[in-house]
Structures are given as C-alpha cells and as structure tokens.
Image (cartoon, rainbow, N blue to C red):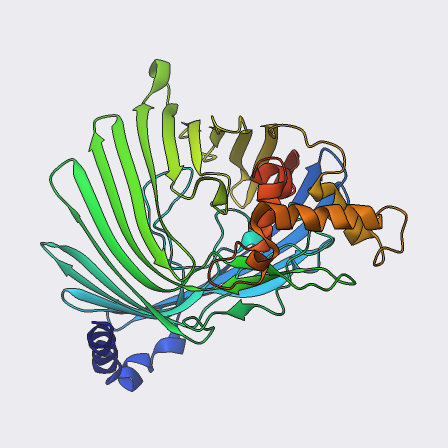
Length: 467
C-alpha cells in the first residue's frame, strides 16, 4: 500500500515537472514583495521559577514574495521568517514558512516545496492537524514549514489530497532563560529517534473531504510517519541535567465533521493512534451559535462550547485530556478589523482552570496591535513541602550536591519515590517505560501538568507594521 501510494505521487510529480524548464522561464519576470515587522513585549506577573525575568522582548521579521505565470496556472510563494528574542537565545530562530510552487491542472493541483497545511474544525484544539511541526517557542498555533509534495485531485465526489513529507522537523523548545518551560530544559541538540523513525524519513498522508449535503461536511485522513509530539528521557548528567526528546513512528486515522445551519455550528474531531509507545484515541466536540447584527449594529458574537477527551487521561502530554472549554468571539466588522475573543478551560477531575483573552485591531492601515492575556485561575492542589518537583528544582540550582539547597537525603528520597512508584527498571525500558517528564508529572501533584510545566499569568502586546 505504501509503495503504491509513493509511486502514484512520484509519477505525478515527474509528469508535472517534465515541462518545468519552459514553465519556470518567466518566473523572475514579475512578482510582488510584501513584508512586516512585529515588536513583541510580554510581562509576567511573577519572576520565573528558575530565575527568569518578568519581562520578555522579541522582534519578528517576515516577508512574502508572490508571482504567477502561464496564465495563472503556475504560482510561487516564498515566506521567510525570523524571530529574535532578547532573553532566550533558544527562542531566536529562522524558518522558511513557505517556498511553494503550485501548478494547476484541469481537475488537479500539484504543490511542491515548503508549506504549512491546516486540518481541523474545532477551536480550542485540533487533534487531526498533524502535517506540520509545532513552533512551540513562537506560540500555541504557530507551525514550522514542512518540505512536501502535495497532489490534490478535485472531483464531484470530493477532494483527495496526497502528501509526501520530505524530512522531519523537530519541535522547538524554550531554553533555560525562557519562560513557560519545563523544570529541566529540553536538549534540542541531541534528539533521539526510534528504529522506525528518522529525521530523513519520508512520511505520507492522505485526506479526503467533501460536503455530504447542504449542511454537513466531512473529512477523513490517514497519516504515517514520525510523531510530532516527542516523548522525553533523562540524560542522567547531574552536572547538566536535561530532557532528551525522543521521536517515534505513529499511524493515525482522523475524522472531521461539521454541521452548519443558520447560526448554529456543530463540530467534531477524533483520532485513533497506534504508535511504538502507545495506542490511544482522543476526541473533541463543540457547539457554536452566532448572533449577527446585535441591536442593529455591525457587531457579531459567536458563543463557543467544546468538550475534550483523551483516553490516556493523566498520561496525555498536554492538560487537555478531559476538559470543558467555553469561549466567545466578537467581530466588530469595522474599518479597523477589530476582533475580541476569550476562552475558559476547566478540568473537572483536577479543578484546573485557565482563562485567556485576545484583542486585535488595526491602528492605521499599515499598523496593527494585538493583545493577549492568560491567567491560570487554579493549578490544582498546592504541592506540599519537599515534593519531588521542589527537589528537582533545587538539584538544578546546586552543583552536584555541593550546595546546601539540596541534601543527600532529599536525593535518596526522590529516587526511592521513583522506585516505589513503578520500579527503577521502568526508567530504562525503551518499550514499556514511562518517559521521565511524565514520571515527574505523575509524582508531583497527581499528574497535573500545570503544576509541572511552568505556568504563569502574563500579558503580551504585539505591534505589527506592514510594508
């Protein structure tokens, strides 16, 4: 099946490329450049748990080049991106978000190069969105560019998309000086891959989408490749303790459904995953209702309600394993493109509560302001004295037990806690062992992610100037 799929894509690519020289000849004869510069400031309510600053400043630079030729049947876009962070050097990075050639046929399109692809219907989380890697240091919704070949077939019975994903992009993580990081920094320079996964592997994916009737749209997807979500192992270097990201192969099937009727929208996403480490399913369903022209004005308001469930429960990598989400979005429909939205997440099992707010508005035709605020209303049960998380924090700040902040007995207690919980062998067993980050989560405050992965109330202001 995999060989047949790869053969179809490669044959299509060669057929479309046979006339590439003639097609690309007028490439540099025209085109249009646009650019934008963004200045970002984040203020955190409290100093970082590991001595980081309450203030964070970053500069974003991006540009886009667009051109078309061959009567609009060939197009090319190029989008470089640079993020400069003045506190966290690991957050500073360059990426090519897009460098994509598109050729349009009668009932097909071929996209070759680097691109970002979005799958999904729901608002709070998109389970099926698996093509691109998360650009974690740049925000929850940002993705890295992915080299690919995408053949899209357009017919009455739906749209079929076939993807060859050429090479794997590793996730970005905050460094020791960054905010919202794990207690032990992640070593992005030394990732590890399983026997079935590799950075140079060619992943593949298929997606079919079509409207079932005037109200319902459905999407089905398959993905086979390296899991974008890593597991973690400990480097066992007490002089420089770090978490090692471990990437494994996974196969995923996804389902998307969306029902639209007048002001109502019912959305659903579900995935089933079989990987080298685990088998699980997850789903999210939501109901939205939109009020248009409130009180005779141009103001629209959409009320959003969603429920999320992950069969892994506490072992899910995020804190959205069993949560309710409620939110609202205001669209002012004015000349300044003003929007405002807020969201509230609540886990009934752990009583964790997170509140977020976003505001966006153009100040001038070429200047936009964006404001984001996040507050954690409840982190669960406060940890008791001398918890494992506190011991880990002290260990990081000491020099191999040479500092009074950590004692030999504390280290012994911590190791005994690991052994008592699951046995010391589970740390070394590559097939059955829980990864160290999840082990820390399990031992600290009943697996509550918010209490382990650093969280803090913050406000972010971003000004963007468009050229």
